[in-house]
Length: 392
Image (cartoon, rainbow, N blue to C red; front, side):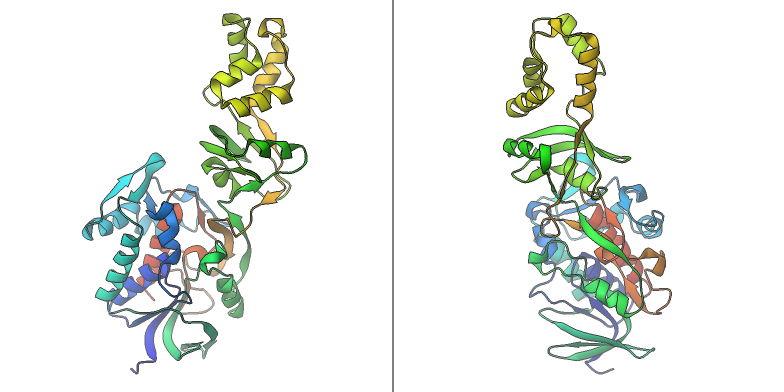
């Protein structure tokens, strides 16, 4: 075997690609990883505020979005958060759990990149960065990849170049172009885990830029209890990022601003504090600027004692189901991940191999599987990369 020939070529030195390469190399396969960035793991390094939210202990298939909601079950069950935690522990990386099962490095996200590179080095994997892929050819037996500096070939090819989210990190839709070259279908990609923009009557809420508060945000059947943040363009914060993955143009999102209040809490407030006003009770429960804006829009003046119970019920229901009509998102530039991608109908759920193109694999964000905020997408990268690495 010459220096230009390998058993496996992995396109993409991100989380999924490096995991796959290390696994294949550990089986004795000669592996080459190619990446257009100047260094591996660029998106890993900026994740989790630089500390890498590397998995979530509550990982479950229903916390992933896909045209086929069952597809992720096989890989996720075969390589679990506990498997990756064991790998992290074996490298002596200290970590901690934050809210909702999210695990972060105590130190730096760089530790996760170093872990992956050390695993690759241990398995004699070659990693070549700053390689611009010019073309990929397939003879029917082997794959040939031509870059600006070389042409290499291999028995197996793994697409691990991610999706178009965060283009400033070098992300593109190349995975989809390559998939289509081989006749694989692509589910239309759209930004996910992304801030939503507001227009029309909702535009005045932009004046609350910087105000954050715990809410329950809902879109369709999806509901998330975390913080929402008003921005100069619309809505953000964890709860909004979560529902953004389910939101599609023309749909509304619903916000419950007072998740800890009982259904008829305003009637109880009227009974216990008849002289209070809607503005005053909202100020006691919400940030002042938000309370004032909501009170202004609800136009309920005077002491609660003077307000009919039916009106108070209507106001309470509105506060628990406040509808916003986003006019868009902040796009791939601000999206953490992508919904859509290479169709799971084209792939084996066990191996991630293309059904119609033997020895071609697709993993990670390139595939139509998208996790919730909070480490789920990293776990999909580890699990799908591990699955492909067992057979590539």
